[in-house]
Structures are given as structure tokens and as C-alpha cells.
Length: 256
Image (cartoon, rainbow, N blue to C red; front, top):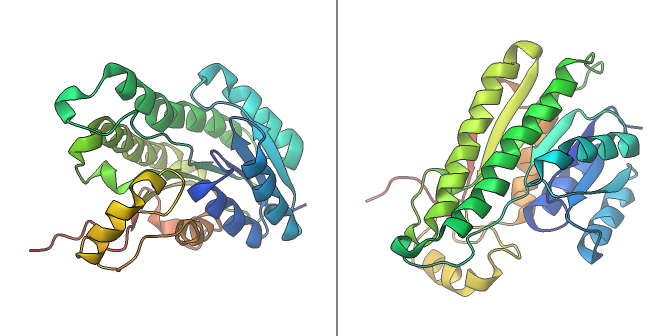
């Protein structure tokens, strides 16, 4: 079994699947976390295992803090002691619209999954990591998938922006806390990625991209994010701990 073992939250589809497959291609055993075992999870695991590594489903809701221990225990029973945590699970707003009409329910939902869960799952994982010896030759790290909206304002989904800004700070906090332990913490900020989450607004995004919204004239793909995560998880960019990698095709480059 590989010395590299990763838990990918929200790993059944979209960006999470892209990351799981990229890590598997680099020899990682993968725990795919999802709310339920469904066709998406099954499909992801089939491709993971095709790389000749272990791949197992780890069912649980990251928003339920009381279940974090069970999620980590389930992953480690299935694939062995984790070297890598990928905080990818996320939700969007309940409804896009006027910032003046954003609801507490939508705000709290975004915070619960996109920020609060990231903080406390990372905390719980980190306690395990610092309590055990590092596997020889293996880079240990946590990768948090935030969003370009951690820094770029989108007033039609302000509560999402706030939650991703929180996730961005969490990545930095744990970089500082875990640096002396030899554990990295990184943030990836995806821009407009073609996933089930963006499917309802794909036509609008494609039109805006054609008009120059991004420097690269296309939507990103989950594999674009996966390749970055693989480089981080294997330690190829170890000295970048605490940094955010803008994976957005030039979306947030200031231009005039």
C-alpha cells in the first residue's frame, strides 16, 4: 500500500473527483468522502482503483462536527494512516440574487460547510498528524479548496464569498501552526470550473469568458485543479506553505 494516503472531502464529483484522480495517478490511496454512496462515488472509485491504488468510500457529512472522528477513523481503517487531507466539499448559495435579500439560512449553510467544517476537520486531522511519526519520505499536508470569491466580490452570492474568505484564512492559520511540525497547508482558489455546481450558469459564464472575463479563453476543468493538488500533496511545492494558488485562468488579474 502507498505511503501516501489522502482523504478528499466531496470527492465523488466535480473538482473533488478531479483531485482524487490526479492523486491516484501519483500513487495515492484515496478515501472519497461524500454524503452518500451513489453512482458518482462509485464511478470515481472505479477510476481511482484503475490506477492500481486503494480507493474506498468514506460516507459522512462534514458539516456535522460530531461526525468528524468517524470520518477520519473510517478513512484510516480503509486505506491506512492519512498523510493528506483535501478540504474540497462545498456548497453554493441557496439562491443567487440581490445581496440585500440574502437570507440567514443561506449564510449559515455556506459557513457550516465551506468554513466551519474546514476549520474543525483540519483541527481534528492535525491532532492525529502531530501525534504520530512522519512516514519516511512522505510529505504531509492539508489542501483547502477555496474559490476566487475569497478575494473577488460576487454580490449575487455574497454569503458564499464570505465563507470562502474564511476558508482562505483557515489555510493560513494552519500553515503557521503546523509549519514547525513539518506539515504544509495550502490553498487552491479555483475560478470558473466546469462542474455540476456551475452547470446552471454555464451558458452565462461561457458568454462572459468569450467577452474577455478571463485571460485563458475557456472554463477550467476539474483536472486543472487536480494537477495543482497533486503537485502540492507530493511536496513539489513544499516551500509554498501558507500560499494561495490562483487557478482561475487569469480571472482576478487586475486589468483596465
